[in-house]
Length: 362
Image (tube, rainbow, N blue to C red; front, side):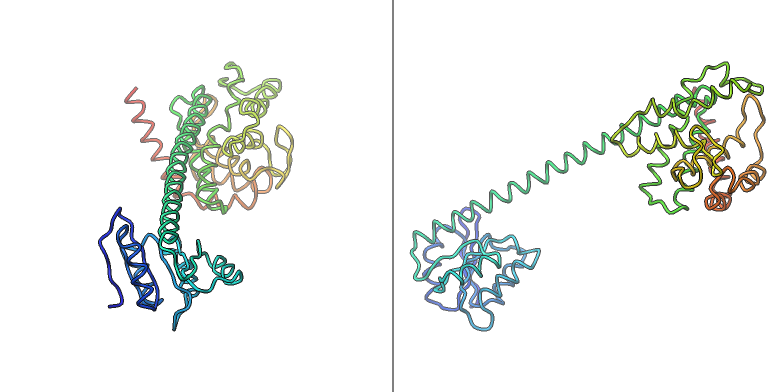
């Protein structure tokens, strides 16, 4: 038979690969009392056993075999993801330095010279089994710790996002107790971001960061923020401070979302033609996130009821957005936004239902 198996002792099995029956008998006699032994008389059978559902824990591999030598068997074992971690120990009469160097370059763990010494074979096998057990234990610990860190990082990210959402709602609550504006504006920012080429992850980040676009309004007095009539020039100058107040509140942060939120705070009132505030940025000097939020924010402000105005119809608001392409807004983004009319209309209905339910709970 090409393959034989002895009962395993200690749960470990050794595959002995050699084309000489006497060598197989000697090694089986040394290892059989201590381990389960599998035998292959050529490289192809060895590869089949190693790839089976019950692979060996270690392979003792002869080098000089017909058809496929031990070096080729070792190379194929190490090239296969399913077998590459099985320790390979060459048992061979080829013990020149160059031979050993070549074997190690293929991924072998050790060399045992023929004729063998039974105590040395047993000691080497036990050593490499123990080392492999330690390697597996370390890999398991690394995977476990990595999984723990991923869960913890996810929890921290979710907490950070929730804090961002709540801060955005806190600023919005002063002039919109339902929070409908910030929900619609942030979601429409995500939709426009996707149409502008952002990845799903980038668009999600934009949605959350956009929620903080007006966080600086916390620093604006109610008598100005909630004034039902037109603002004086002095009052408007106070309103124009809220982007920089928002950027100061957020501060310089390592978080990608918070860095984007800070950019949005500072840039969502800038205009494509350079006539915006607070810095008078022009064109593509304005961050893309700010250009996207500028459109979404103005559109939703137009369709929302405010102390100083009634809500506009969607078509009227979109017409106004279209007329401001190249002046107030990025001319490449405006057509993308106007084409979003069905999604914007659906978003208005969804958020209206959600906020109505919220009022009923209150």
